[in-house]
Length: 337
Image (cartoon, rainbow, N blue to C red; front, side, top):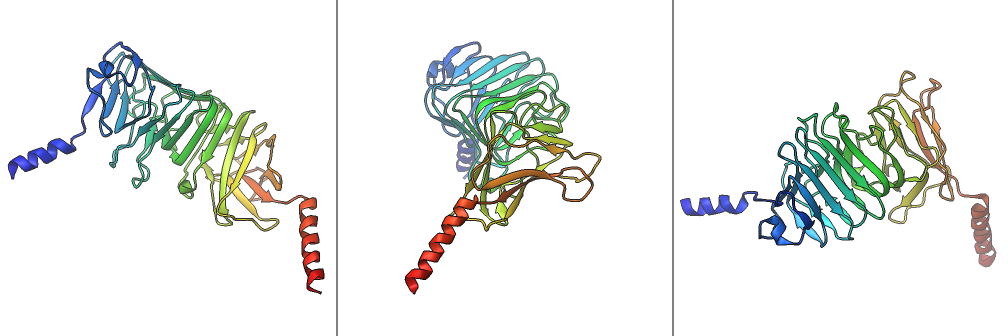
């Protein structure tokens, strides 16, 4: 019985393999991991060197720079996919830095998935650990890359050395950005697509993309895209912003209707609101450069304090569409006669 218990403990323990310090090479080369390939449940640890994900990989967890003073680079640029899928209540740390260490992730193609089905809220892409203030971590999202994660977190609210820099690609948030882990700090989400998933409905606490003057003010820059899913009049993606300012000028609005849903003419959806509607704080502004046919968007004042606090999408099919519908109904009536 004792042996069985010990074997059970050994089989469930989270093993770790460490990248050979200073090595530059492909993830699939087992020599870079000390001679043995990673299993799908193990933790990959990169403290120093440059690793390139060259084939599809599934691991339990990824930690970078868990020792002081390391310089670690992870490249995901070959079209290969990386799945970080540890099934436990523990938060994932895609990037974790300690004092005086430097970590960079260059992600320009392929998909990085940091979540676990059935464990809502446990897939965290964390740029720095919550306790450090000196480590530097940068996540560069570009090209055709996709970062699909439950949570995107800067690590702690005072750290300014954590940067999420998106100049392309797609960021998919299934849950939230932490209220005190928002990633702005001069980084830009000026291209690519910011997308919420329907699973995030009613649980998105805060989200930001680019060029904020502080950790509470946000802009979706020219060339960026905001993508909202709408399933019904009461079920749609929404952002609740803990902040003072938001601007969508120059960005592209994309609306995906799910499950065959077609809104009634004049239906509106408040997809971006401030958590506290107050004239002291709220100022949403900026017209989208591109809006899908049949939709209008505007920042509106919902509490008559002269400050815009809500981004409202309204379904307003073009007159030509309504006219065609009318002609179709008229034809049906004539046929019945």
